[in-house]
Image (cartoon, rainbow, N blue to C red):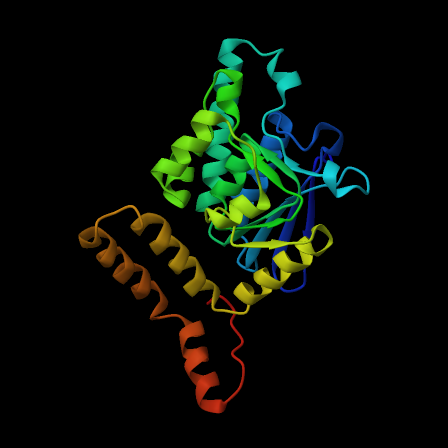
Length: 266
């Protein structure tokens, strides 16, 4: 398998995925999307997996030149027919939706430039943290197109409709300070601290009951855009899944015995 998507697994069930096309600013081509899609699909069946981190590989030692991803590979795009472009958009949209819907939480560790599809991948993640050198933006309208991998839908749900329209219509690039102010990211750290911060957050998640975390993600993802009349029964259904689990009984036993619970995802 090619090394354009690096995988590193920790002993506590955290999978770090690194987009590894640094010479191309980690932009997406068909091959990278296929590999990301395959890994995310398999993650749904890995019961020992607790959290995923997605980041970009570094190009050299200068943080000002690092990229999370600058979106679609425009060199490849220039060689595609209209039908192939349609296939690419279908592929990238479905891949990012799979990231959004994968069973475990996904953290975007945004470590540099994140334009177009790079920002859209971050939007599909559950939690976003970034380094102070970040420059982001949904810049597609400057190329006479629109965000096609979920950006027109996910950005308004995170930062609000008015701000999303402003950012998309203007194709504006913005820095880490602005990303934090508008609620697009939840934390900003120095570039050399980003992966450690992401791992710390992932471990904070991983120590909790995996079935409970998965059901909380399900309830939030599918209930947040529904009316309360629909969302509250959905939450109730998700809670019901946790009641017969061994992990719930383990949590009660650990509380009574004044020890830390050992969750097994059962």
